[in-house]
Image (tube, rainbow, N blue to C red; front, side, top):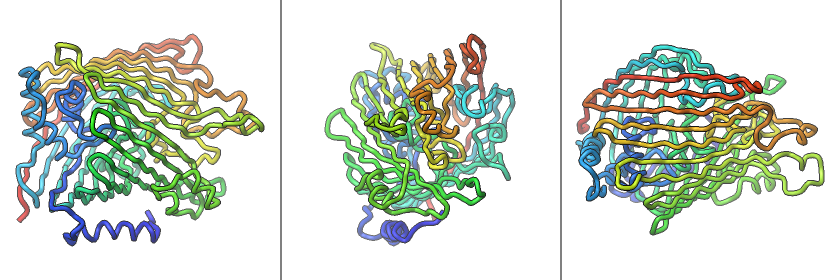
Length: 512
């Protein structure tokens, strides 16, 4: 990835003090992130939903380990039952650093699994271009997770060899297609901000569902992340180079993504986030600093500089309470007037609304949400100027659908979490990987639900048991499909499931 002069200067301003112990860095230890796929996160999300702990950073994932440990220590245990209190102790024991910085931590993991499918989300079945198909297979995996913390700097490298990747239709690796780096980054942190570079799955928006533009969908997307502000007001910027494509002449087309977000958590129950994003591409184009400036609007800057960009504008909100309400709203493209043929282009947008909480007088958590993504969302008149990384969405992996989900979470034992789920999904024939329709096709292009709509009702239950060094996880359910394969009247019933066992061992110590 080539960095422009302005970006290099900005990085040096942050990195030089980080490594020289400059006065701009507060005297505190850095903290690694707890990945979204970490074994502890389902239990953590259950504790947040039921009000046992306060969400350290609403509308933002992943959590920093230090922030999560402080939230666990401050948990409200007065009304918690024995199982919840023991779960808190187990999580604290697993996540608390036992050595002060400078220190290192090494964790090794070995796993075996079997599944009816190789893709990550069972709801991918028969969706996308080309459609994801279920194929029964067994898998094996091995990983090594290294954390190195020196004062305000943390270095993380997490290589994983997982044979599931060889069969996952979303995985883009070719030369060594069983090896990935889910997390690989260096981060300098201080009270007023952070400078981060590397690969780490993020989610901007409600934690119950993938963010509409920033989520864990894209595998190992290296990016620069800058954040500064206070504990209640923070400005964040993400810059990344997407995969290079080729135009009709065979010329390489460089593609870039920028995002900026103002995150505000005033005293009380509310959290807000206002954000924008832009994707630009072209033969010979590089990082363009006017699209990286968080104090401007990407859409206006494209007009000012006589360049072009696929711009997005979004707003997130959450209100914490006995019942926590949340929402995310994104506008991709909308035509205000109807004076010309191009004005007939359907609106493109995405949104999520939902709530979560605790079933009264029980320790059972619940969450419910409804989300909708329009037909042309993410697509652009320039088919290469889209937020896709190796054909994976940086937010959602699909478009032209809506989904309603109700999920419960039950701590049956301190080590055992059960999650029953009911989902209704309606999928049209639109997809982010399809070409943008021509102007003449606008009148016949649907805003939502292009073509024949496939409907899936999913009844499932997931479970995760953690005992000492061993973890047992599984998920199984039935899909009742109407208009299967987008064929009118066709029906299908599919059973999807997975089960896996993982053994982990870790060691940590102070650096000499």
